[in-house]
Length: 341
Image (cartoon, rainbow, N blue to C red; front, side, top):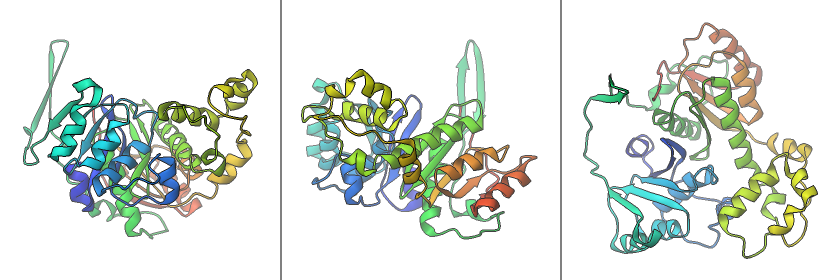
């Protein structure tokens, strides 16, 4: 989060689960639709609270029981939002008295609250012992900034500042994400992270599917789902995910909708979903190493990707560039691998 704030100049937050971030974001204001999607409509949010609400909103199912990381002081608004969410702990440079009081009461007093030293610098050599063998490697100290975009290799050279910001969010997220990994980012936040996969195309598909779900959560049919008032937010998140999936018709046949809704919602058809997603553009995509084949670009295009940064160096770079040019995608090759194990 410290790196993300240094790169963008904005307060930053992340939601971690099982070694990798489920979401990361900076403090870009929320519009009315996103406030409803993130269950914060009518609530005043500070900048750091906005960053965390965005980070958790990237993948609310995966963020269930997360560990929170903040670049700035945790304030009352952030703590109040956390108080109503299922979370296991937080690390931040400082806490207001009121925020600390709120967090002390979470999980019956067992919520893990850590204070970080912003000036701490870890050892340059990292060590890990596995079954009696000690591995050593130099810590990844590379600074990620606008130089990532110096080598644009596609016909389309357009790269607006908003895309640079989102690509930086994607790449800094990937620096701390289990490899192989790919990250889709949009409007100041990660919206789909595919991590720890053995194949890059599986990363691209996994992250792309998450990005699609993120966009579909704003579909009018999803926003108007007739939930029963007693249904908790985590159950709403899970139900929305099922509603968006192709399995929802099976759930309807089983009558399970009666557990959650006041009336039976109309399904969201594949045609309706595709029509909604076909309107999406301006998405940024980062990869922690080169794309070996153009199939990754084909899949990224289906999720509205317009801007890409990747390492380059594959024997099939020409094919990857060709597919980008086919769709008018701007791609920079940064020459940097961000493998993390």
